[in-house]
Amino acid sequence: MLSYTTTEVDTVSRDPENHFSNMSQGVFVGASISHRRWNVAGIIGLCFFLLLIGKTAYLQIIEGESYRSLAEGNRVRTHVLVPPRGVIYDHKGVLLVENVPDFEVIMTLADIPADLTLREEVLMKATSLIGVHRADIDLLLTTYARTPFDPVSVRSHIPYETAMRLAIDLASLSGFELHISSMRSYPSSFSSLSHVLGYMGKISEDEFVSLTHQGYQIIDEVGKTGVEQSAESLLRGVPGEYSVEVDARGHELLILSKQDPVAGASLTISIDSALQAFIEQTLQQTLSEIGASRASAIVMDSTSGAVRALVSLPAYNSNLFASGITTEQYEVLAQDLDQPLFPRAVSGEFPSGSTFKPFVAYAALAEGLVNEHTSFLSTGGLSISEWFFPDWKAGGHGVTDVRKAIAESVNTYFYIIGGGYDTFTGLGVEKITDYAARFGFGFPTGIDLSGEADGFLPSKAWKEEEKGERWYVGDTYHLAIGQGDLLVTPLQMASAVCTIANGGNRVIPHLVESAVFGGGGEETFFFSSEPIEDLDMTALRVVKEGMRQAVTSGSARLLSSLVYPVAGKTGTAQTPGDRPTHAWFIGFGPYSDAEIAVVVMIEEGGEGSLVATPIARDIFSWWFAHR
Image (cartoon, rainbow, N blue to C red):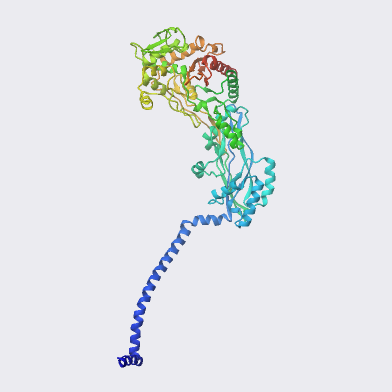
């Protein structure tokens, strides 16, 4: 065994050919293992290479534009030039809204030093100079980290003296600069215009997202309420822009291009500010005398729908918002139980009381249930089973036709034509609400203001669904005299009165009359009107005569001494619980050729004939003297 082994070893060592053969066999076995390892390494390398190529492609193609923008932003900046906002005039050319200089501090994140030590020094100094909390700046840094080249407002509405100091102090502070802009000013001292004009405010995140494509910036202000909001697209104008080359500190070196902005349109609105002021003063005096605090009044051109006065009290000062209202100031307004921020003439919903009766009378006449001579006996009320539905006048009004029913506000007459009695079949809830809708009740009028309420026309189905009760004839009685679940807005009532006054055409209440554009040109806005459905001119004539009779011998006799004849209807609307009634008046004048419709509503003010009618008289008197 040993020799064999020795011989084999010797043979191998002595035979070069066999040696290389065995070596080659040995190398072959070892190489097969190494080859597998190289295959795995190759696959891994290939994957890494492909991943690297993919990442590079992603950076170049997908993120390339973003990185190019960042690189370009280190050299070129494009700034938006905000156009001057359009001013607003009243119907007679009185300036209602203007622009005044304003100052704010702007921060550009990309210009703040990247070095942590320098960055901290800049931020600490900026906090001290500007007079803001460090936490507020840190929040802005976090919020706008992805848009470092966009300017961000740090502090606005800075007083002039402070602004001049900051202009010097911030000159050497990278990332911060004083920006000269403008803010709105509302010169009138009469607060009721606030609900018409509205106010401006910082653009919200949701607004910014929806308006970015129109060139808005996160530092911009937009109209929040009133005409400022509804006419935002007209008032704003068209932004411009300019591109500049900057150094590493963000300092401008060279203007590369510039496109000037186009100023916003100057608007003329339909409001007569002198009439608005007069009505506000008159309402305030009445509210003070009777111990009430909330009221609405509207004057509309009865032919065109142009709103000459739109008063909601209490109101607020729009300049509070223009100059940057504080949290404390806003909470005072928001928590006031009389809701001064609430535009009650447009958004308030109230029972109408007897001011609804002319529209019920029209429905009965148009349906042929009654004619101008049909009479019923009013003895003080109607009894249905154990229920009694009273007239407002003890003992009743005697024999009553439709004109007298309107003039003296005879409940019994409207109970009968509305819900029927004995053998007489009344309109019923469906026909009452159908005709009410023809006059515009139950849905918005379409005025160019946001937040308009719908009002409410009740129905059998609604009562069954909401209250789990069937509709009774008593519900129809209440509806026929403007009570129950019926709700209207003062603006709806004004629009409906216009329809009676102008011969049956429904008008669209509106405020914006014309615009003079910053780029040249002028546009006058026209609003169409159309007759109500199946207009019955005879029925309309009788209703108008009834409203005229209310002035000559009925509940609105206080207006009989006016220099021009007018027509009207008073209303006293019951409210839930033991609270005082709402005092209403609706009317139009002159009677033969109406120019205006007037609506007055004093919340919890008492009787319409005693409280609202005197105010209406003063409004008509003013109009006839100043028209």
